[in-house]
Length: 274
Ligand SMILES: NC(=O)C1=CN([C@@H]2O[C@H](COP(=O)(O)OP(=O)(O)OC[C@H]3O[C@@H](n4cnc5c(N)ncnc54)[C@H](OP(=O)(O)O)[C@@H]3O)[C@@H](O)[C@H]2O)C=CC1
Ligand SMILES: O=C(O)[C@@H]1CCC=N1
Image (tube, rainbow, N blue to C red):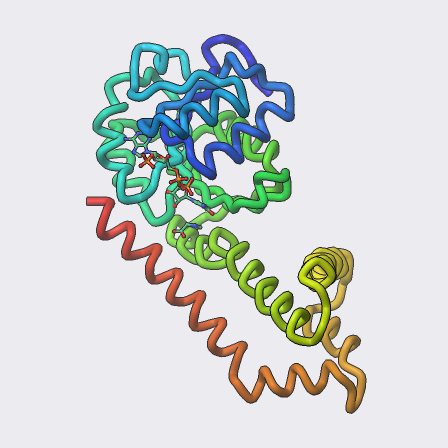
């Protein structure tokens, strides 16, 4: 991790995603003094100071000049306004956006630089198990790309996409994805309770099953349908459950839901990227 004074890292927006990345950086040994945050919400600033010991300012100031990397972790709806406030305060920094939908053309126009990497992380970054996709605007150097990889590695895994439009699909799949998993966890836990288990028992069984099945899928050479078939004994319980889901077209509905998420990512870019 680069730690020289001119390579400090600034975060614009100090909410959920900023906290996930800041937590990862500190765990990897970046000194808190190398990080500063611009966050207008006083309660969020207090939380950042208490949790991480980083400096948090209400608005952009001269301190941002020393940041080699500026991480944009504001909502898509507020990115343009935040850019207008911050643009004049950053030096020749590399910019990393985590915002859904907002295209690098818009960011380049707002900030007057081409040195931009867009990313789509997810909240498991909070526990170092994030999955992030990255897109570099043409002209971003290999050194800058390596730096971004190093920063994101503190929160989990990453991969690069060649087409910026792919980030909308990534947003629908892995950016929003933890919410789908939590949705299934809610359903499995509720079913367990309805069938007589305690909430604690049901939740522990459900979360352990997700974690174990994901590990198994990653360790296996076989595709998920084969792994599923191995669970599905002929005439058994899994068959009864999967048949019920197939009759209700759960898979088709689920796929449709992800398409809706991707459409929304595109809309966010159109609506708030102007
Ligand atoms: N949450 C998730 O799972 C993921 C989120 N993202 C993306 O990350 C970005 C941030 O999301 P998330 O962290 O969840 O959102 P949060 O609302 O938790 O954080 C955004 C923060 O930015 C602050 N803010 C608003 N205006 C400004 C400004 N002008 N300057 C500086 N800070 C400002 C907000 O303050 P206030 O509340 O006062 O407005 C808020 O605290 C979004 O663009 C989202 O698309 C990407 C992947 C996953
Ligand atoms: O729901 C959203 O818009 C953001 C982007 C991906 C996850 N959360």
